[in-house]
Each structure stands twice: as C-alpha cells, then as structure tokens.
Image 1: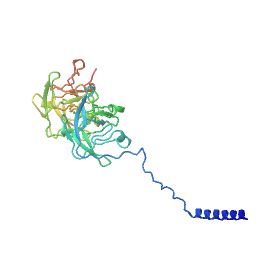
Image 2: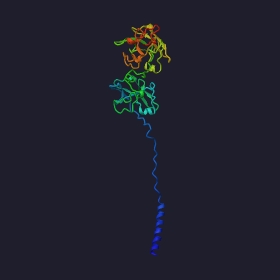
Image 3: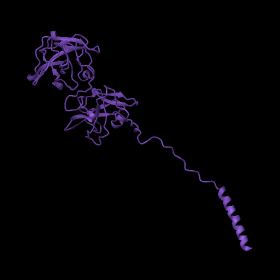
Image 4: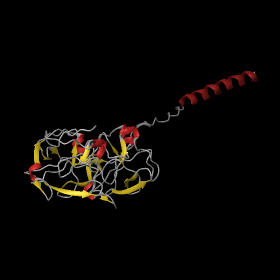
Length: 317
C-alpha cells in the first residue's frame, strides 16, 4: 500500500515539473548582424589636408625626377590626355592620384609654372605637371623606390623638365601648345657643337621635322603636343642673321598659323626647358635644329641634300 502511494506521488510530481518546463519561454536567438561591403571594395579616398608639394628626387639610373613632399616617387600615365586622367577604378587602386587641396607648391628645381590641377570624376583635385596628371605607385614602399618605372611601357617617372624619364627624349611628353604671339620673332642662336641655328624671341631652340613636306606640317595630335609648333598672329619677324625673305607661314589643320623657314615648319621641343637647350636635336633621326642658311643641322654623314624647293621634306640615306 505504501509502495503504491509513492508511485502515485512520483507520477504527480513528474506531471507538475513537465507543466512548469513547458511554461518557461525558450531563449531568444542571437541577433543577426548584417554584413555590408566586401574585402574587395575600393578604399575610400583620403582627402588631402592642404596644398600638395612637388619636389625633385634622383637616382643613379634615372637621374632627376619628381617626388612628393615625403620623397615618394611620382609617375605619369602615357594613356592620359593633357590635363585629363584616364586612370580610374582598378587602375586608380594601383596608381593613386596625387591629390591636393589648393594650388600645388613647387619645391627646389620644380618649375612652378608647369604645376597645375585637374578635376577627377569623383570630385577630387589631382596635381598635374606640364599637363601630365601625377600618380603614386602602390608597389613603392619607401622613399626612393621606383618600381613603377616602365610598367607595361605606359608608366614613367617624370623629369623636372616635364617629360618622361626613359633614357631618351620622351615621345609621349605632354607640353601645352605654345600660344600664338603677334609677329613671332625668329633669331639666330648658337653653341659650339651645332654652330648657328634658329631660336625664338626667348632663345628657345626651333626644330624641323623630316616627315614634313615643303610648307606643310605632318605633325598633329600627340606629335604636336610633344613638338609644339611656333605659332604667330601676324607676319613673322626676322631677327639678326635671319633671312626675312625665307620666313613664311602655313595654316595648320586646327586653324593655327605656323611659322616656316625656307619652307620648313618650325617647332619647339617639350624636353627643352631653358634657352639654349637642344634636347630634341637628332631625336629618332627625324628632328633637327635649322641653320640660318635654311638647312637642318645634322652630322656630316647624314647631311640633308640641298633643296631647290625649300627645306621641307629633307631625307636621309
């Protein structure tokens, strides 16, 4: 009888405990925290706090080239257009633009007049030099690194003269076209190596292009960016030692009036940064200074034949 009572009591207790357990609410599940973005998102642009400074660095292999205020190397992209960047998206991740808040500042050896800015599509302001937008390379980790030089043959360091540093005058330099001046003057300059040759009113060397023909320029587009024509708004003026009768003009495809001499269209070179520079002389065996006698100045072995129809269209052996 006692055993039967205990069994009934235990049964009742089990029923009570079961009812209590079912009345206790289950713990709430942990909240799900939404995940936004991904590990491949492009990092946010870091806005500059003030004007960017551009200085000059150098190395034994590349000579002098532009760097930022901390000495990090700056590069140009040859697929850019003058004052317009073509590097966005993934390109800009590997090649971050040199940004500025305010007019960029020229350090020692940098030409302040060549510094400028361009507006990027994201609203930031990128520094330019001689028309080239400037960039860093993500592969450079320390001051003096130049691991971006000649990457895919489109990225180069840039010299204080405003041209790419490739061991030769840059074929892709972006010199802003020279402005036309009233009655552009042509004078005679000289040096020991080349003798007398034509220069403009500021003493900057003038060149002829072997691919031109008499009184016709065949240098347009990128070529005329690298080799700006000598433009005029009136009849050109002959300086001392220059034949006024040989001065003339032609109308370029863009409407500009270019000065000619003995039939040869005259040009500057973007690699010349000071009066007396002749960095373009002999470039690709196509560009030469011009003598007051109306002939391109070349080594004797490749002297141009005399021309009865003007100096344009000179040829080589």
